[in-house]
Amino acid sequence: MGEVTNSQQQKKKIVIGDDGYVLEDVPHLSDYIPNLLTYTNPLQHNPSYSVVKQYFVDEDDTVAEKVVVHKNSPRGLHFRRAGPCQKVYFEPDDVYACIVTCGGLCPGLNTVIREIVCGLHYMYGVSRVMGIDGGYRGFYSKNTIPLTPKVVNDIHKRGGTILGTSRGGHVTKKIVDSIQDRGINQVYIIGGDGTQRGAEVIFEEIRRRGLNVAVAGIPKTIDNDIPVIDRSFGFDSAVEEAQRAISAAHVEATSFENGIGLVKLMGRDSGFIAMHATLASRDVDCCLIPESPFYLEGSGGLFEYIEHRLKDNGHMVIVIAEGAGQELVSESLKSTDPSGNKLLQDVGLWISERIKEHFSKQKKMLINLKYIDPTYMIRAIPSNASDNVYCTLLAQSAVHGAMAGYTGFTVGPVNNRHAYIPFNRIIEKQNKVVITDRMWARLLSSTNQPSFLRTRVDIIKANKDEEPPTQLSDDNLMEKQVLAK
Image (cartoon, rainbow, N blue to C red; front, side, top):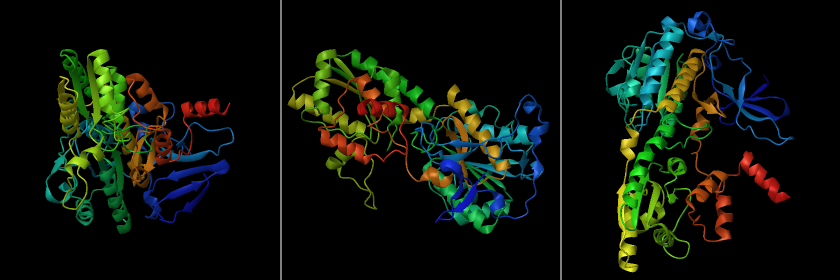
């Protein structure tokens, strides 16, 4: 495929090809365990795959990170394509797999669990799979749960996770000791960026010990803030369920004089749910997200916009992400944790009181504000049809990768093609809404809200704050070409 080079961290596995081609490959068990045996993939004799024209992905199949390029652009960065390989590095009878879910709840967790178990069983003939109870700490402090296709048969119809979950509890030595003592040789870890950081540490310790154990991550975050991949599972379900809260807020707002419906949605650092729910609803007049600072008073501020909207329409619906406006909340509440870190305040309650205070005391204007926080209702629902399909693809791709001997990877779609992505790429930064991109412009044109950027200086600063893109999107490329003319 090309020349393999070592990075300074000696964690990255880089392959250099012609014309600027770069493959950021994932680790393989054979990288640190010599003379591993390989076996014929059981899928060759699986009736389910007998109708598939091409059983296996080619060793040279890769997925481009960027698909929009200039005519003279280098071929750019690629990831290994996910899918079944011709050779596997585990005999099905020798596999002892475990699955763990960590962090907050998210629609689709049970579907991923189900499809890992069923994928291992029906595609590869693996019969020994267990669940780790209660997140990372379950490796060393709780009982395990035997998982069979019969046990997981209908769990996708339920919200939450049948394995239980928790935050924290990551003690690397205890976890890897447990993996080694139990004879586990495939570990499937489902969780967000913090969980994937823990997965990378577990993988590194397993590699240090020279264990024949594959570690596969399935990225989970309802906020859709994981980089590289197109989206995270549960996001579509969350956006769909958020419509119910927005519709209720709209009904309340339109039923009263000067009615305001305020809905707080998930999004600590990224406003994707709020943005997509707003665009899908068409009932929202203002969307506030962490990436787009806003101010309350003065010309072009939120209070002025609310007043104009109420005078024009007689009602208003506001959607706010939980991480929006935290700098304003902190100015008045000044709360910190014992370590001195700023706590995330309830911006929904805070802004509700500020709106009420402004219009009752300063404007002498009667308003009827209803505040709705559907956060935990959304987190607890089962996944919708779209996410169920997506979770199936994620789970099966992870199983194919582990059986093929790949390890230290996260699986996910890159430009609608599933790929194996090194842990370090998933955890190095968060995916955020780019407020100078066309998607946010579409939202502004849909709601007709102000951008809350006071001057051209603020717009220039917003552009500088965004990380320079390695490549332009279709829309931005067209826009640049038009401006150039």
